[in-house]
Amino acid sequence: MTSRWVLGARPRTLPVAVVPVAVGTAAALGFGDGSGGVEPVIVWRAVAALVASLALQVATNFVNDYADGERGTDDTRVGPVRLVASGLATAREVKFAALAAFGVAGVAGGALAYAIGWELLAVGALSMLAGWAYTGGPKPYGYLGLGEVFVFVFFGLVATVGSFYVQVETVNLLAFLAAIPVGLLAVALLVINNLRDIPGDSASGKQTLAVRLGDHRTRQLYVGLLGAVAFGIVLCSIVRPPALVGLIGLLAARGPLQAVRQGSTGRDLIPVLGMTGKAQLFTGLLLAAGLVVGGLVD
Image 1 (tube, rainbow, N blue to C red):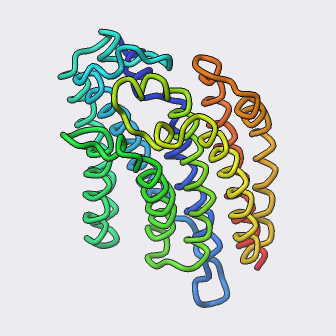
Image 2: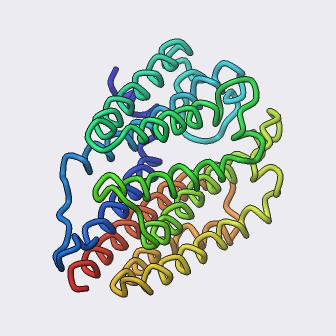
Image 3: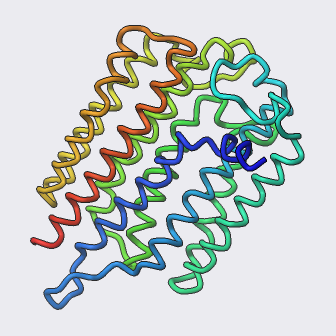
């Protein structure tokens, strides 16, 4: 069944992979070519970066499904169905799916490395290793309270700055500034996921950041992250004022913010995860649009 693999890929989390590529590419579009013009987007490179980013996200999701299914720690979860824990697929099948997704990322990244520079291979290899070790292996760092760091670094800094780099083969301040709200949006998505899972994770021994902080402080963290996203967008606007349009996307976060503040728990937080993903996508795409406009009018 194709549908079970779509389910296992966790579509609601995929904005985490799309937004950094869109924002990094948009920032690069406005990068000067040294002659008063603007560097055009190299479409195939943007597509390859998107494929690599999506494949890494899907692979990480499958590793999580496989590893937790093997440990039995997903048996009492309240979130969406997991393939191994529900019996929809065997651990071996899900492990193979994760490796296949890593392979797709490797092919896309390899093409970029061949065209641009072999330094990208090191970045890609490190990203894959981090994606596996997040919940795989004997001591997954995602369950030591470090998952948010991984998400900010790899789906914020690395993916956004990397998408900029594959276009113009250099980096600048704007690339790093743009990576800040992107990374924080990705972290907010993980925080709401882990907030929902605090009871089950506590019982199974998963020491996520949410478990360590507790329910109340995790909710405060979520609210603070969205505020920090707004501040990050303002920082981008210092370089390119039209980037402020990204703030409009945060209006989509009103629903999840209200739910979090009102104390929604368990299954009531499942739609909040989806709404947070939509807010992430809207905000990221609007930020990207503002960066494009700002680059074209500079």
